[in-house]
Structure formats: C-alpha cells, structure tokens
Image (cartoon, rainbow, N blue to C red; front, side, top):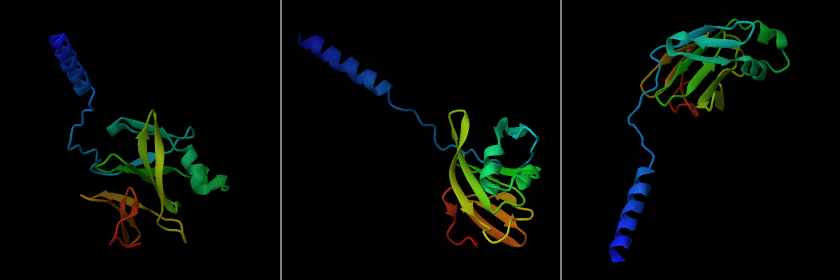
Length: 155
C-alpha cells in the first residue's frame, strides 16, 4: 500500500512537471529595417521578407474617421517590429503610430501613440534601435516603445 502511494505521488509529480510552460529566452523578434508596404484596393498588405500579411482597412478607418477620401488615398504604410514582437504602423498623413501585438490569426491593437496631433506627418520613417523604435518625421526624432513615447524621447 505504501509503495503504491509513493508511486502514485511520483507519477503525479512527473505529470505536473511536464505541464509547465516552456519558454525559450532570450528571443529577438526585431525587424532590422522598416517595411514600406503598398496598400492595394483589397487593403491587405504583405511584408514578403517576413512572410507577414494583414488588412489595413480597419486601421485606415480608425485613423481617418469620417474622411473616407484620405483613407482611399493612402498608398503605403510603414511597418517595423520591435525586439518584443510588437508591430509599429504608420503612414504619410497619419497623426498617430499604432502598436499591435500578434493575436490568434490577427493583429490586436495595443496602443495608439499621438505623435503629431496638430498636423499630419508628411513622410514618417522608422529606424530600429536597441531599446526603442525611432520615428523620424521631418527633422524631429521620437523614441517609441510599445507603451508610448520613451522618456527622453522628443515629441
């Protein structure tokens, strides 16, 4: 009886130990450079180098609200991915940078960062940096993280 109890406890401990989640760390999901993606009529953009595709029509509708012409006139979006795997997306004439995280068969918005609330950006560009994503807009440089503008990053 005692042996059976000990065996049962050992098997239970092994079974529970096998259920622990496995994490492979560190992991770096960063794209070394931004992707400039053409926006077709369907709205589905494709970053072929990274085998990534998603539809930007809901994003354009959010950014431009009632201005459907501005949404239709959007020809490209700029996308970059940080080390943690968050996607940063913006485009010319946007006032915001949108941060998305990967979900089950989708990208889910994490944050909208108002980087140019007074005037739409003319030609925004992303650069990959070690601890943040750098946004260039004209002569201004802004340091972005998944949470917003990084402390010390000009706005």
